[in-house]
Structures are given as C-alpha cells and as structure tokens.
Image (cartoon, rainbow, N blue to C red):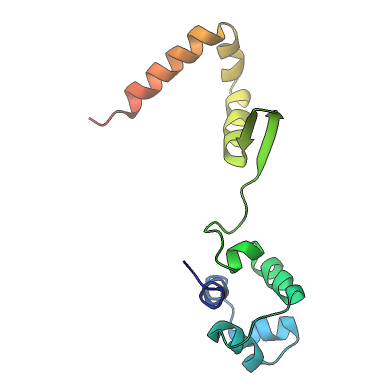
Length: 125
C-alpha cells in the first residue's frame, strides 16, 4: 500500500511538475513541500484539498486508501440496481446504436442470444 509521501511524489512526477512548482502553487517554500514528500511533515486538510484539486485526484487516493485516482461514481436506477460510470457509458453507446431498441422487441430471448454470441466471440481459440 502506498504512503501519502510516495503517492504525492508519484502524482507530481506524473503531472510533470517539480517540487518548486507545487510549492509556489501552495505558497510555501520548496523545502516545506519537500518535507511532505519525505514524510517528515503532513499538510493541513486545506492543503490536502488543494493538492487533490491540483492533481485531479481524490484525497483518499493521495492518502493511499484507494488505488483509483477518483472514487467510482454509481448511478442508482432502482433501489437494487446501480450502474458504474463505465457501465452507463456502455448502455448509452448501445442506445445510440439502437441495440437496446432491438433487444427490447423480445428482451428475454434477445438478451439470451446476445449472451450466447458474446460467449462465443470471447472464447479463446
């Protein structure tokens, strides 16, 4: 699991910033920022928020609590049915291509056909 200092260093480098660049954005000295990356000091909550916004990641990601840069977004359709952001995008694409309309003509049979076809094309040869 990543520590805050490791994650902070990684996102800074991934975004192409030097320590001096981030220190200037935070209005602190370069050595004060360097202490964050060395694990000698911890930023305030407000500074943590600023860092997360700057790098476009969640504070939980910076803290090493989650491995994805942002929390997954879920859309609740009904109490017992939710979609992730990616699943919703897939449904939108299926709708744009009128596949949902075609499937809805005979949903049970057509979905089963689609499942069988998907299993067929996704089998390893």
